[in-house]
Length: 234
Image 1 (tube, rainbow, N blue to C red):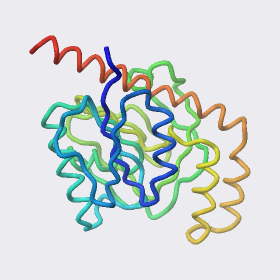
Image 2 (image 1 turned 180 degrees about the vertical axis):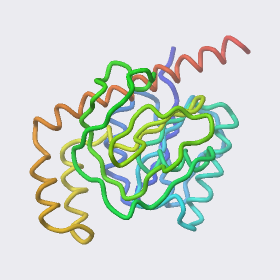
Image 3 (image 1 turned 135 degrees about the vertical axis):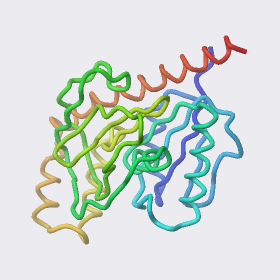
Image 4 (image 1 turned 30 degrees about the vertical axis):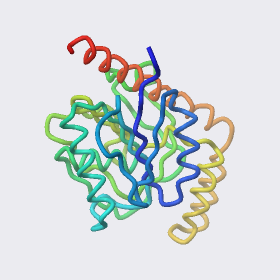
């Protein structure tokens, strides 16, 4: 069977690194759309979709955010499996009926997240994970009917609802992206904190964080199963 066809909804304002990271991790037929430029799929003829990170907040009143929410809502109604990462995690939560809030602080750097070991998305990943994080918003309330499967001291880091999966951390990041994103926060965070995060971007932490990349293969495996079920039902 052909590789699954995935709509990559790139919500980053500077999309190059985001595109590179997700295309490297998604072993699929990826069709990419740069959402802040107004690009969106015309329909739902995909096997699944992925919403990336962004410097935007889901509660901002910007036309492209509203259009993206509308498309994601339609994709959910159409039964498409979806994966949200960071901003995408928050946007899926918002569209599915959850709540997102400003934390009033930043979580950034390689951090420990606990997962319950029972969720399909993180199958084969240790229950105590090292992951790279960078966000100042969080999902304060998961959507009704969702199962929260990952948390840390900053809050919800993963949930599933029906065919939707979402994680707050960045499994797609390589060390280069982690470093550039951290340096880009110098106007928002004290120099001492930035330097501490940069010191933690080393081979040991990156190697540990690579384990969470398994979620991309797990997601695509799930997408293929849903596609097979749909074909057999037709």
